[in-house]
Length: 312
Image (tube, one colour):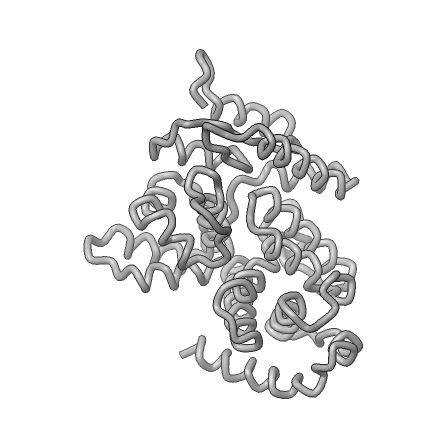
């Protein structure tokens, strides 16, 4: 980060612009807030000095193996170019208002941040980075905010312009609402408040990438289309250093039978929640094979109740 003549953030900005498919990692012991915000905007991963060489080699090897999964250069470049995603305008505006207020309600701020895929994924990227990581991986937005501290979150949202793409785009608002519905439903299906709801919230994250939107700014719900978006979303989350159990749940949530997890677990709960939240029928064969098909009517009732709760 502190190279002479041109610092690391500027170098990676030029790399992103010229070779967007390049996986970008910053190694630095420099952690001033202003520099951290610049790094977040151009780097996929952040490694703190001193760094064990074995861990660094493992990160580079894992990144290369991840990119090798995608043979389409256009997809690799589209995902590599992304450093920010548009937040839902209404959520973004309210978060900014609360953060700017001296007496902003921390719980309300966390709830709003956790309701939006774009805001959540960026904060979790930073919380899971080596700059802030102190122990286990972070699987939900509440713990991410606790790890970073509200002051750092405020800087990230208000000062960095990372979410400056927030606009009046109704597409983003609709995606935020369906993602929040899926997340809330996944929590009720699984009975857990961390992994499953976070994976469900982020399951459709690829649909926020401008290059992957289809004409008319709507995304069709064909099997091939949703499977492709699931794969791209998983690649983006892995590239940004989110925990692999979240990445895997996103990768297989459209076709859960392809997952190594054969029992109805995290991937199954995310699959059902995302399908129902988007008015799709879950994979009935998969539900029967995992012995939970009889629970589908209950989950459909949960969906109706969750919709009513969120609309209130």
